[in-house]
Image (cartoon, rainbow, N blue to C red; front, side):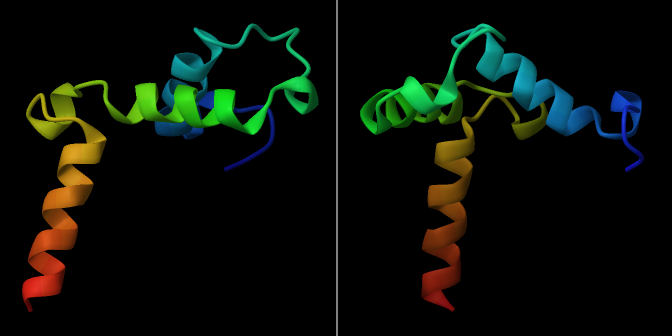
Length: 71
């Protein structure tokens, strides 16, 4: 993707937008404790997505690992 062309990376822009709901753009990311980052990431991964058939990314990843480990 070219710099300063967010339309070329819609998935990333969507993810950043979801994160910014919890972290305003003026937030000093260095000042956030790791436990808070973990909480935000858990919340992000536990949010159902239409593209995943309204499953959460965590559910899809768990299912993927289950299938991968069976082979």
